[in-house]
Amino acid sequence: MIRVVIADDQPLIRRAVAQLLRGEPDIDVVGEAENGAEARDLAGELRPDVIVMDIRMPVLDGIDATAAICADPALADTRVLVLTTFEDDEYVVAALRAGASGFIGKGAEPEEIGRAVRAVHAGDALLSPVATRALIGRYLQAAPARAAIVDPSNLTAREQEILVLVARGLSNDEIAAELFISAHTAKTHLKRIMAKLGAHDRAQCVIYAYESGLVVVGPAV
Image (spheres, rainbow, N blue to C red):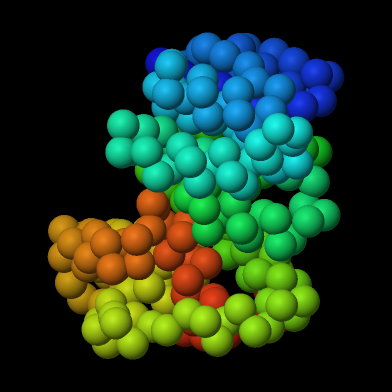
């Protein structure tokens, strides 16, 4: 059973998402929070598998709450799924950089929310390559100077190659097939990349790949 906390300051949205997820046979909504501070505290108290986190909330916003949760070693197995309207690109990117494992729109179909929770719980970054490219493209156009801050030179050539494939949405098995290496070797490389970047999971690797310029934003296809 996947244990979930819902954090959203809008009661109607929070209850609607909770009701949808309670209808899933493998998901248990164990708590609800109306601001980021409550979400952070519930995470420490309940140790949920996934937190569905709104970004704009009072007291403590979703970005700072995500950063606090993902920085806590006791919550290393807790994943954050950002719930967004896709209107605030900078905030969504900031939440992903803070440690969120992916994002889903508030207008998503009911079955999509359940799939998203399962995906991040399984350790997958919920980042569609097309949606991510569009999101980061808009963000970097608004704040192009950010890319200059990120330096990929501390990664080996092979690690940079693997990081690019991660950003393009390939799984470890697909990376292994692409580079003619074993899936175990691909996973080992990715662990080293994440350690060097201080990344919580694959989502932060994707952000780094774009901001460093290893992956250039182009038109969505």
